[in-house]
Amino acid sequence: MLYTRKNPICAQAINTTVFGNLNVTKKTTFIIHGFRPTGSPPVWMGDLVEGLLFVEDMNVVVVDWNRGATTVIYTHASSKTRNVAKVLKEFIDQMLVEGGSLDDIYMIGVSLGAHISGFVGEMFNGKLGRITGLDPAGPLFNGRPPQDRLDPSDAQFVDVIHSDTDALGYKEPLGNIDFYPNGGLDQPGCPKTIFGGMQYFKCDHQRSVYLYLSSLRENCTIITYPCDSYQDYRNGKCVSCGTPQKRPCPLVGYYADNWRHYSRDKDPPTTKAFFDTAEEKPYCIYHYFVDIITWNKNARRGSITIKLRDKAGHTTESKIDHQPATFQKYHQVSLLARFNQDLDKVAAISLVFSTGTTVGPKYKLRILRMKLRSLVHPERPQLCRYDLVLMENVETVFQPILCPKLQM
Image (cartoon, rainbow, N blue to C red; front, side, top):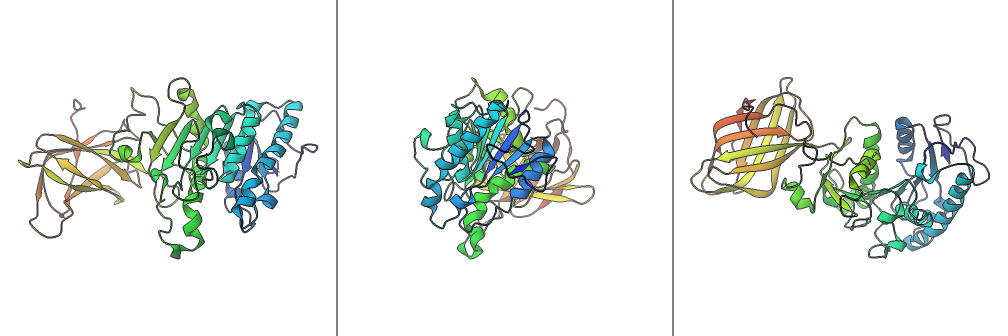
């Protein structure tokens, strides 16, 4: 089913003998859906077609293999994937005869569709321009050798979003760069129990598609951080990309292939990148570092909640409580804070210190200096405050001042 800027709403049915409006000299993006137990078209398909045509004048080809994918028996659908790949191979061969180039072929495969893309790429010896795998299917593919699944050699550049690694998705890296939103497990905003109905089963799996969509139309760029593990990312150990001395941070979605200019011959064949998201569209999270130097005589362990407010009264909050921080005398602790909103000019900051205990004595945290710095906008002035005493579980509000220029 072909969509172009000439026919963006109503698709043309095309095949190896009828190309319709397909212009082989332009980029051609194939969208390949996955398992369809009910046979209904994917709810996100229209938005994906529209978004791709919005960002670039290209051919968008929706591969409708619904007759193979629609069955309640997953193994039946899975067994059809190589047949779909063969049909696509014949179609692309004909495009090449008409003057097309493999460099201009881009495949976006969702779930089973990701592995179909890999099979097509393998048939062309990895010469396709790019493959994006959106939560590639895990069941029946986990642990399989590279020729039986998507792998980094299937295209010139392979990027993958893993959003449901503990259920329907594939856990291990499959691309040149593999993105793990929220660690690749439970996605915020998705039902936590079976009482959520069908959404409980498919929400995490589908989130990969919606994160990709947000890169096309939403005015937020989802920045990610190359890292060995989600825990290291959460602890702020992997956020040096994007600084003047380092190369840019990889982006999720349509513009992920900017990373290919930095990845070849410089890194291992695969890069893992981690990031957190908000519960709702457009899912963007804005990262800040909160640097705290304390002067308590004894070490204190606990978590910090930080809230920002601008002059218009907009507020945003971050709880840094995934693991307790240890505050020691004259030692700087750098905490990675994540906010749903990006406030341009912060007028007030509040801090709450907690040890997590509700009984027993209340502790104080004596702060020599607190500094707030934006990771997304490192050019913004850094904000400081000196000589604060936080009573446990009591919100302390203050106006920040600009940090001295000499401070690092």
